[in-house]
Image (cartoon, rainbow, N blue to C red; front, top):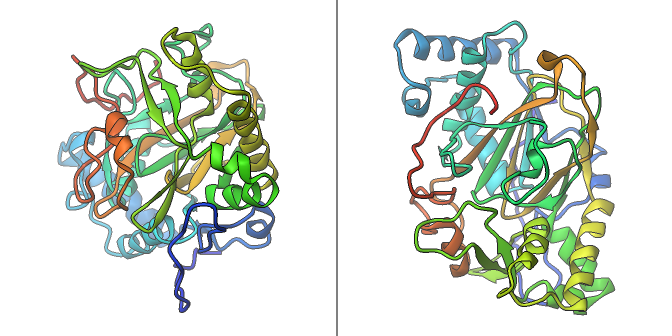
Length: 360
């Protein structure tokens, strides 16, 4: 079933601290699992148009990172993507696009189709210290450590958000077993904690320190501060960073987590899991999430022994024109946070923006 753009005839009250919040971005996995309104399955005509646009940019020699909405012409699919962007930013906060025709395609064409869709939703920003605008989620067999990101391993990931407005994941290959995507509504998590343990909801609105994990901008400390729940300019924006919060405890000058803070982080994780929606990606699926309202994670997985069959996702971090106002503290991590600017991403000295087609 194709996605239905969110519309509301009921005025929604701006969220207030320590009060239940409402709106289309507040949902449970059980509710979402009863329908497929959040899935847009490409029609044959849409898929053909998408592939044709990708091949045209290749024929014209347009570098991947220079493809914008004007270079990637989608007369039929473009208006659909505009409605999908509204679903993500103003509605439920997520969508799954199914049926991108990647089977048998060269990696270049698959990447161009994915990038072209992303260009209709926002502007790509750097995802790491290497300046990658096109990211790769794949087990690289690296040992654990501050410079190893969890998405480069087979472990399960904690519920978290990324440093951008929208994160997109496109499946190239599935794991042998496991590796399910898991998402949860930050608003639903807040409401549940508020009802059960208001002291934990209040604690999560306080200050936490996050590890930059060696991705340190010039002139900055190797850590920065966040609050999990933030009420700002008529919105509730959540920043889920438990893994980096716990990692920041390795710094001697970072305040120690209190027992209440530790309990609150564990409760947030457990509540997100309780209220989550699971997705088993197929090759050609793309998931887009609004980072400010939706947490994401994945289950641990067992991979195929053959390198060419191993689980592999492509990732985009997107800045959305006209995105929501953000709490001021995010400027420490994001740089610019002003709506209408290209904001977010990770910028470190010496990094050159690039779009690698292979993980590494």
